[in-house]
Image (cartoon, rainbow, N blue to C red):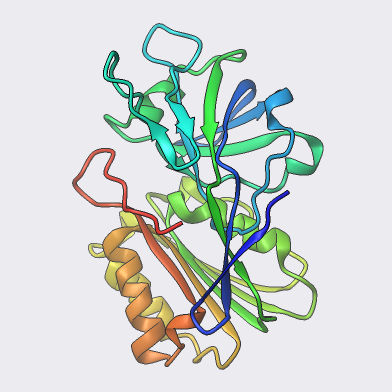
Length: 276
């Protein structure tokens, strides 16, 4: 049972909901390559029982096997996080958004974007069915408390799982605009939902400045109006630009903006801090 903490964020638009912290050991039961740079891993197992992801932009900490191993080494967790063990190196986890589409069927999908030197990406290149991964979290969720009439979803490949979660939850009668930046045209994925959907793709291989391209696309959109949630997930400078457009050009109150950098250009395995 996951109870709200009572902490209300940003003028009661979002509420912080905390979940019991637990490490789950899950088996790889599916591996696919939807696009050239993406490995989709499907996890299942008895440990998935009780897993809760209450927000489209939740994240879990993923622990993958070391090279040559089939089972991930994971840290011990206490009520406040990782319990240090000076007798061995601390296992390193990476943040990923849990996709919601398969949860009802007892499976957890994670999309891993391939990039040189990445801890999880290196494992994903040679992932095998039957590998056992550690999944910790989500530790908390930012749950929307008010009905939103419109959503503007901005992301690169790393934020696309959260966009897909938003689309899965979108109800008929709502308006959703998705602007997604990808490395090349081959990375485009089908997007659909029950709401009215407008999708704009940015091909980074065709533009000298992907951040400026994102700003140009957003600037050409009509101001979204009140009761609009603006989500941004992806490279840090790209998402900073999304936040600036939403706040300064459109006048969206900060309370309605859920934007965070997931990685930083030029830095391998950099991870932005999360407040949840």
